[in-house]
Image 1 (tube, helix red, strand yellow):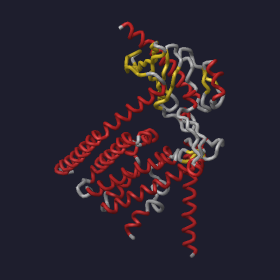
Image 2: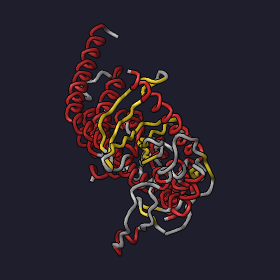
Image 3: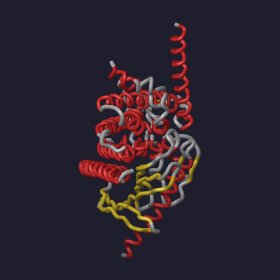
Image 4: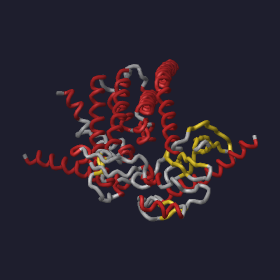
Length: 225
Length: 202
């Protein structure tokens, strides 16, 4: 190879690299705002879901056990008494990567709401943790237009509401959750696992247990300060 | 007619997945639902079209011994454009396709077509080639996804088909992808063999 060839190749690669870097930075600038807005909206919607009736006052991120921990403080006025509640980010490795969720708890550690933000579990098995049980069939939707009122929260997420996060949450294998099971499960502070995806269920319950411990640590830390 | 042939060859005669055997990874991974397959096709076709146009436009000035890094730079730029656009305006789609959007960079269809076709042909032909290949890729993906979604999830485009029926979960998992792809390859080869047999006997 002649030196002139090397110089020519270098120049061409540099020019192409420069053009692509320039166009990408332009693209980044256009999309930056919508992406940030999307994430903000998603977070606010999740907070409203896990802290029904409460107003979020502030967001805090602290370092506990060398990991960062984010939680939100919310309040609600009821009969002139100000009630406090917290929401926190819980995360634990599931079957296909981390399962991240937001959990809302009140002063007695009762779970007010629970929603999964991020999961990459197996479709048809673990991914059913976010699946909304829909009985709406193809024909209903397009031909008879007989749209039944859709539920927005999956049964897996709904069953956590009302449980005590301060105590260990047991896992039972009773098949898919339905409304009649609710009282029995709450009495035993248990959830029913997704069939074929006990690892996912375990990741969620453990992340809540770890998360609530971190929350209490964070709150005592705050009082000391 | 010549141009039309350039376009249509990607659908059957040189179908990227079933004949050339390239781009298998996203084919097996994202065909769990029909809507995923459609979005993946749109994303891949956009990158393929962009890279084919640029590669064919600069083919005369690119030194042959550094062509691969240049092609990869072009392809990667288009992939990031797709990724950012989806993230900003179609977050649900971005979430569903996940890692397979950035992985379009290493999709053999795109580099394969840049190397084999666009670097040797005019821009118009390269555009037709990209669209044809995209259509072939899309039709194969869509067929696979429809079969897998119906059998594995009892759904189509997210709507339940038969109320109360338990689907065969294996079809939505990795083995189901291999089964379906294998059957499609078999069907394609049978049809091809029949055609050539008829031609010989005529």
